[in-house]
Length: 261
Ligand code: NAD
Image (spheres, rainbow, N blue to C red):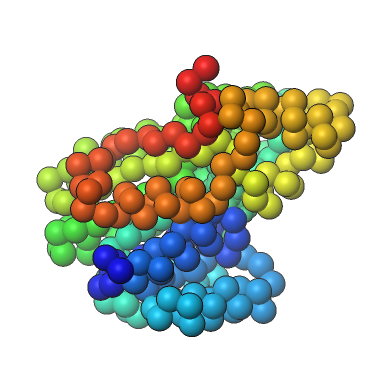
């Protein structure tokens, strides 16, 4: 329970990796802000479940990570409710798979806004408080696609390379303030985000579902296994610990060997 007096905001935490990170931080005693979209009753079940299971406070912010005003409002709400944001996890993300010349302009704009710019807006809102308190942890969910590319994912790869650069820059700026800034770069994690891109990949590459899973997704991963959300969450928890206080500006791969190739 080493996060007992801490509060965390995890963007995109109504599902997948973000929800696992929020739950893992709460398990260590942190109060958490859940954020993201989904059916209201499912979100409420996740929120109330965290409070009941881990005896922390959990609140929900519907802030749209496309909208800078709503991002700032989410951070202000967290500071008002919990008195501070000690841990910020920029995790919200979407994907779109399409050849570059057919890539919808609105999808490009949305992916850059949600997967990259939202982290900028959230970081700039939490940093003054973290500096004042002399402690902070900022963790960005990047991707193996922050290090290498795959065809048909131009916006996603551009955004994820961007978040890796943002991570390094902010880490240097905050290095003397006891605020660490890192990104975690998972390979393929079995979540709704991966499931949803299968039909488009089938279309773009003219493959069956099984071929996409085995020959495209797991093809990239030498271990031939998906990463689990719990594994990513455990890394996020470690990055908030004292043992990780000298890890900053790092891009931590959890990709079954994908980017070692
Ligand atoms: P997911 O679809 O399960 O979760 C995405 C979350 O983001 C959801 O809570 C969703 O509601 C939220 N979200 C989407 N648009 C939003 C918006 N405009 N405002 C607020 N919230 C919004 O996906 P996931 O796989 O858990 O992805 C989480 C992060 O992990 C993303 O940044 C993704 O790029 C990254 N990632 C995923 C994988 C993978 O294989 N699943 C691999 C590497 C990196």
